[in-house]
Length: 163
Length: 110
Image (cartoon, rainbow over all chains, first blue to last red):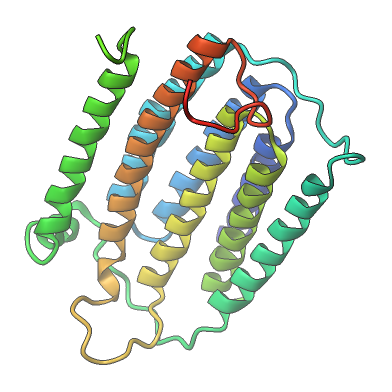
């Protein structure tokens, strides 16, 4: 049961990833990405990271995807002509590079020697202990990065940059 | 079925490769951004897998294998910040050019 569900989720995630890369309309890409991110949240739950699974739904499938859909509908980009590979050698090269990356990364990661599985404390309690203890400085830096991004978006959104 | 970490790691590598292909193949900066988000997510999946099924660590490190979620958390927020700034830049470019195609954009200056 668990295995069948996992394989189904994996297939769904790969299919939606193909949808992101292969749709000619940007809106379809955005919707496929939403499916992909939701499936990823479920996979996070499978890996015992409850807090991050929920954060994934809130941050990605919620905030980031709303932003993406907003931008896509605002810009209304033209339909792309995909897969006209003749005259675009860099596209064939891109597919090749992606394949090589996937194979080498997969082989590399699978080849690591492993200790027997020890579940991490993926609950909010263990996470909070880490974030307020050893990793308090990176956590604060994350908050600072978000503040800078906020200010950057405001500056970029102004009508006149020199005004 | 093979042991579970293999499944997650191969899925993560495939998603990363697909994302890289998308960045190279697509010409629409919005879709390229989506592919980058997908690659970051694939990396997150790999990190959580390594946190769950730890590898043999060299001695003397500061943290432990259970710290993976913290890194995933940081990557998540950096990705959100990157999406905000990137989309703001794309919209600004669109406002001045009425066209978003990375083949036509080779310089950042207006």
